[in-house]
Amino acid sequence: MLAFHLWFILLAGTVFVYLLVRKLRRDAWLFFFLSLLSYGLWYGISQDQPFTITKMIDQGIRGVLSVFSPG
Amino acid sequence: MDGKIIIRGSQFYFLTVNYILGTTLFVLIQSVVQSGGRDAWLIPLWGGLCGVVFAFLWIWLYRLHPGKDLVQISLAVLGRPLGTVAAVLYFFHFVMIAGFVLRNLSDFLTGTIMPQTPGPVFHIMFLIVAAYAALQGVETIARLSQLLTPLLVFPFWFVILLATVNWDWVRFIPAFQPETLAGIFRYHSILGYPFLETIALFMFFPFVGHNLGRMMTGGIATAAVSISLTVFAIIGSLGVERTAHLNFPIFSLVEEVALNEVIINIHSVISIILLVLIFIKLQVLIFAAFETLRQTVKPKLRWPLLLGILLLMAGAAPSVVENSIQNGEWTRKYVFPYNAFFGLAIPILLLAVTWIKTAAGKRRRKGR
Image 1 (cartoon, chains in turn green, purple):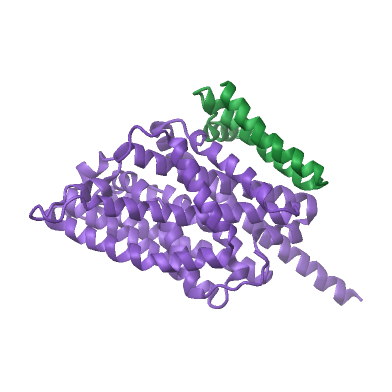
Image 2 (tube, chains in turn orange, red):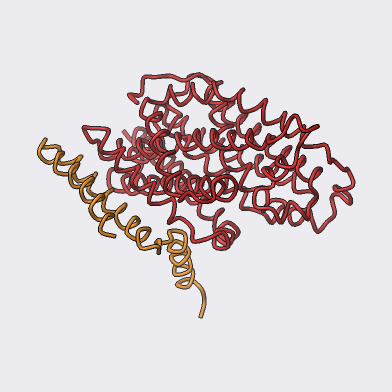
């Protein structure tokens, strides 16, 4: 678990800081956004409980359908 | 990736065929045979026919905005805020398809050849190689696909022909029964996967030289016929009952072939073909996802964006589905509506807004 946090933050943090130092703000925030999403996915994987994307979409579709269904 | 490189129509044709075949030959056959029984080989044919109609819609949209890809059209038609929302949705769609492709790859490899290797090892290795190729640009992707096609087609059909030693026509009898034909048209998942997933190739349209429409529709038709012939060969050789219970029928079919103890282990040929097809599909998806964000956000450097996409795709692969049961349920219930949102709803919206804008412009000009 610690190894996951170390390698991920080291990799993503280094690139993010590098981009900020080079004053490429747009690049830096785009990378930060993608890294943040990846971190969420990888965190679940590292805990052996991956977040299931299709389940989330399934729940979303059911939620939308329940709003429109009568009764 | 500067928009000046042109790929030949024939190269785009091969890219379309390889992209559609991608994981389809290995993942879809079991569920196709479960739904269509003895007449399951008809499913890819009607799916392909619908795929050609979808392609006409995309080409129509492209003709109204020549030289622009899907994201550029979204931004031009819907305006910056709504166009960005559409582009981000397409980005996540491409990442999700890539997640499915990688998951299929690791499921296949851990289920057949390398059961001890963790899935993320395959995901990361494949992503790095495919991303390197995709970074070289659209011309490299197209040329690589063209170069590899003969090396895929001839060994594939040679191996399938070898595997038909147990062929029995009785396995197709009785054919065209009303209940099996009804099952064929109930299996609408084939429209979503693989035919609506072809929307990713829209990102290549501005780079294609001539005969875009003919090459794309020809590619879809060729892929549909190839899948149909493969299903036909598998039913004739293994039968419906057996195929419906195998995870990878094509692999099992070829695995049993041994000719006079001289030609053995030919299933390794099929494994390599699968890996190459997955590689081509992954390249297209990485390119599509990369270009989507590049054109929306316009970053100065390319490599941090690519690194971010790779981290996300590698994370999406183990997270895309929980297990094969949940995957089956997803495929049965949501593959078509989910893909229809990206492959039909958004393009139709773009077409409608384009018409309204054109009509409003004409009326304004007449009014002056």
